[in-house]
Image 1 (cartoon, rainbow, N blue to C red):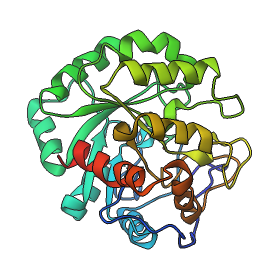
Image 2 (cartoon, rainbow, N blue to C red):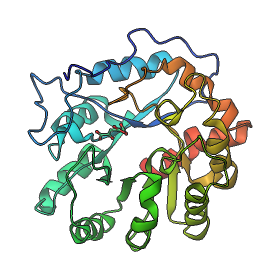
Image 3 (cartoon, rainbow, N blue to C red):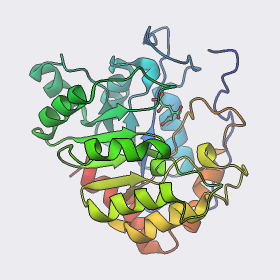
Image 4 (cartoon, helix red, strand yellow):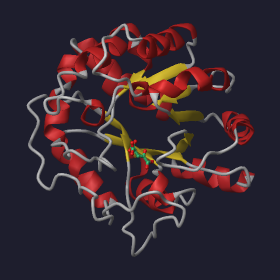
Length: 289
Ligand code: 0GY
């Protein structure tokens, strides 16, 4: 583990908010254990171990029912740790993989059988070396044929440059962490307005209203993030997903108490109908449909 790496909260509180039945954590990771699943040589950070059993224990503690495990960059394109978790939990999990253009159809089929339903394209320079866009396009065109979608992670200031490419990708596109708005700015900030317009014009775009702990300037209870998340939930109720982002890689200021993360949900989805869409119906349609 890197010397400045902050391990996840050892003892999260029990949330006050009670999840609806079958609620999904649609963005979380497993790390290692490194002794069994070594981290990728090309990784940009080395986290603590965060095992599948710890993830499943957290799921139960928080009152969640299912997980979508997203491949993290510290494991590169070796999806074995994620696959191990998917196989252990069966129908309670789905996965999002990172793959290269050299992946074979048989390997894609194997991932699909284990529960993978998407690929992740990461555009953050601090996390990955750049991949040529034509390579991402080639992968997207292959996976859309087997019913998968693309998850994209970028910083809001990069959207202007990325937008023509992202909107040319086929199929459903899921944007990580609200497109990473600068929450110190007002809601009508040009970057967030651009993202809202993208979501409005392109009905194939979905968004995860996740990572208040990562986006917040003020820190817990992350009230500065709430207006951004609520605006997305109100405007795109049938295309929003929610996730814990456990084990919260690369947090520098603090690690969140996941019980507190859950207690924000009623502030961002302020009716039982919106909560049902965010936590159950939308992820079920996308990952278990
Ligand atoms: C996240 C966010 C981060 C890391 C990764 O794959 C990753 O390594 O996504 C980050 O550092 O912002 O979604 O966990």
